[in-house]
Image (tube, rainbow, N blue to C red; front, side, top):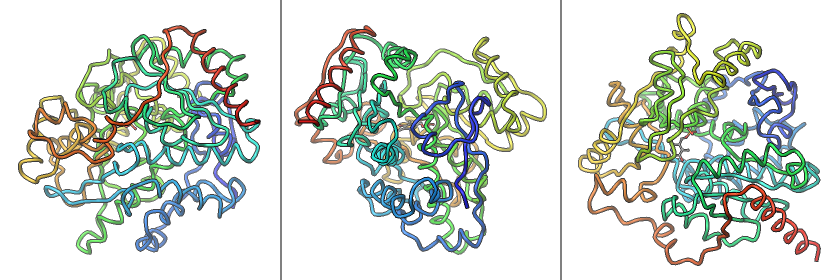
Length: 479
Ligand SMILES: *Cc1c(COP(=O)(O)O)cnc(C)c1O
């Protein structure tokens, strides 16, 4: 059976293979790559996966999308298993029962946030594709970060052959722990750059670099942002895993399992949606937002209307548009790329997309939603700490607050805990005092030596810096 093929949501690129989609990231027509067909998992097959350990389950789920004609089976197994081995917990993403529902702990990876699940795997796929001829064997990954993405990318790419990873962050505006997680990595292929400016300035520098064709080609620019299909794919495994752990309980064996997902760019919950389409018995998918609630407004009123960013205590969900949402809109448009392109044009021109009638009903049957502001989030953190001795991070608390708001607290409800509370001490301290002892790896960060460069907020300066670093590394490799 040949592997799944992919096309752009906007119709400009069709029938691409997994390798091309992973190496390209964003389609040339600015659309996102989506699978042309969703592989199915039967009930018997799912049941036969019950006894598998997480890494073996991950191989089964991912090989539904990536077959022998793309990556040889033993290579795929090696990539997937090495990605799982980077986690501190044997179950990779353990499921615990707290307060009458389940919590799926996604924070046992190197940077204590769920993005590790995807970026460990993406790093290993990049390395394999470069080794086997893609891109002439070189890739310069450029990203901007205000927090979690930068460190997860750095840990996914450190030491990888053929790859340079350049992460721009706004000088003095990233939390001390997040900055240290990036700048204490000593591998010579990692280049952290503090920019004299804001996060938006950093993002503009990245965008402008991708929009300079000559530079892009010369340095072999690549991206790790959340629109890469590989990231969504990697995340599907933990929906299968947590479904199986919930239904290990014979009383719940026939239950549909629901998920509450603290959401920003819609990448995490989208993996749940694809899992459901593959045949996983999923009940509700609950979109949980903070004050940046464009998705909550969409699922309650049909209004996908852009508003300015509000600063919250769950910074990794502070977005004004959701970069992965286009993949769901494509589904809602009945996989019609011209209709989707029209919607996206309307949105790009007016900052507004409104749906009504049957479409809104369809969206509301696919997802429900809730919004938790700072006060509600802190209350949930305090409540869980006092009543269950379980300390939630501010992102996870948004998801847990959502199930209390919607009355969905039951044993087949899984709330996704996307980061470790120890990463957000100043927010958590407002609800829990004294704070729990932080994990050693986070506590130690403050004593480790750092490596960081500084650059003005200037495109030419940044591009020159990148070229210089890449040249130095190529020279060192050929010595
Ligand atoms: C990135 C992130 C999120 C949001 O995930 P999306 O895929 O963007 O919806 C939530 N929590 C944490 C801790 C994150 O780092």
